[in-house]
Image 1 (cartoon, rainbow, N blue to C red):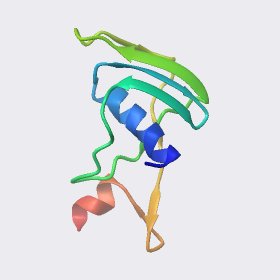
Image 2 (tube, helix red, strand yellow):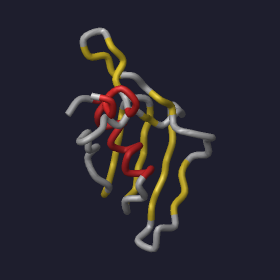
Image 3 (cartoon, one colour):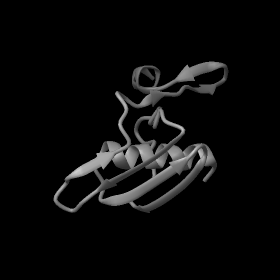
Length: 91
């Protein structure tokens, strides 16, 4: 799993409220709990937008993370075509 996938997994876990403790600083990620990003049936194209941050999700689904408005969308290029929710769903 490369660094980008680790950051995407952290974002995915925060997004779907998986119980855990999360810390990131640039591309360095420490994640206790959560899950790996699941790209089937669709590629998950988001990462946290802050350079450094902390977040947690408790078993009662109470959660908190470094404040930001929304996750940052990234694009994956396959055969010089950007792929995400929209393009993969059409295939």
